[in-house]
Image 1 (cartoon, one colour):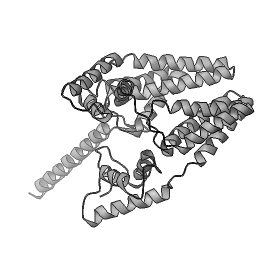
Image 2 (tube, one colour):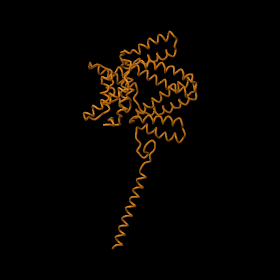
Image 3 (cartoon, rainbow, N blue to C red):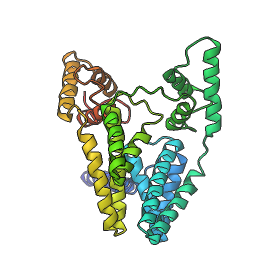
Image 4 (cartoon, rainbow, N blue to C red):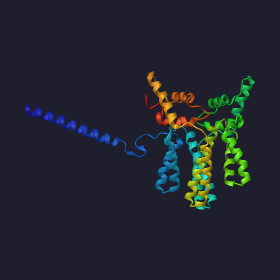
Length: 358
């Protein structure tokens, strides 16, 4: 009896050990290996064009296609900043990259670097190949729908206000977000219904006076900068200095890109010219009175604490609305983008739209 008991116990032990090893082995095989990109074993996620771009990266790497590999990697990196759910969102990133590449081509042509021009032209061909494969709604069709919305409002004697028309266009069933981006709809509405301009910007007034002085003194670089700023205000709702500052900051960013391109091309003479432009832009930017990011952060933190004091969930969108309405953050001294930037640092947004803090 004792021998049989020992035999049964040993058999059970061996069975358990075999089962444990088998399960462990199966688990190890089924556990996906991790890479910098994430879990390889996970099912591919994302819109069709993004999946294709990821596949093409592997092919380009295997074939040692360095330019294509660089273009694709930059696109993939650009998708990491926010959730990408549609081909249209990817198209927006492709179009942005295409625009930046066109700017680089112009800079390299000025720098007389044909080798770099040809490299960027190859970049454009790769980007165009992806953009042409994405189904979109044409600007002509968007325009037709916008004009129908305006006609419908007028037929009912309702005011065809810009925001009202834009909101209706965004919600129109023939303009689904899977096939058209908001930026494209906004652009068409702006063309059909140009903003009424209300210019109360001291900076813009000063720049116009400076334009006359620069003309008299034959300051060609300053003339170019001022004309560029004035032209950038056309067709836009410039109501105060903050709106002009946004254009100046955009010009500063574009100027820095030019400096980087000229440095790459080895043209120090062009770099120095752009640095003069940077100084002029900085002078105008410094003349605009703004609210510091420290004050914005303090206001945002106070709003969050008020939500917590009432035991209410702290939601990113609600904090943003409260901050934009705060009398401590007047719109003529602060841009919405600046508030959003500080809020994102204090209260990061998760993919669901709710804050990661509570």
